Image (cartoon, rainbow, N blue to C red; front, side, top):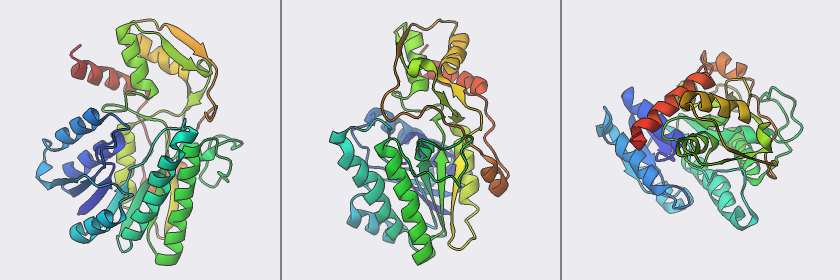
Length: 322
């Protein structure tokens, strides 16, 4: 099966592409290698994909999804059967000076992808737990209103969900939006809390802990996320319109301070903390109800924080020479 994966050089895109190759699919990787992120890390992820078993079925295209003509030409040339859309401008702390970039990539880029994907069997795309915003009672269910976003990133992801619904209604395009809950694991972003905490502990640097460590997150290991993506990809929605939203999270929120304590135990190193107030746009807590995902696919994320962080510590030691 030919699967087009946008954001293939990104964290989740890398793992999803590897899983697709491992099961024998052809992967058409797309990424613009945005210099706003860690380009060396993106190149390292691509290099790994090119050396995995099945890598002969991997092709890469340096295309920006906001480039309408290049994207359309790619679809016409490659003719994918299914699409996994993971490319995005990420982060919940977007400032006013970066607002246009978020809207261009996350909304306009997604709209262009939807237009190009008409006729594919199934489009699976990344949404976010941040769409639940303020006032949603926990645990978060997909039928919540999700109409009070706290940051620009969340607003763009909610807009994507609405655009997908329109394309299902007007054009019959089957779409599944996956609301990811705080994904972590090997090959992750170094600016996110798990790797930032881990490397600060290894190097004896102080850790800025926002919300004084009381904020709670439903940490979900990337192996579980990749498994969920593939299971959903193989099961297009059958409703009218063919549209659905699914949480991808463990359903077990963990306070940041407790998350950090697990890392302290694994490394045998106490943290030096700078306790800071929560930043604007941050949700106090995220908590997934994964029952719809389990009902649709027979799967729910299962890797515990203890096990997931043990894997992360081992991977980082191997890749940092420690």
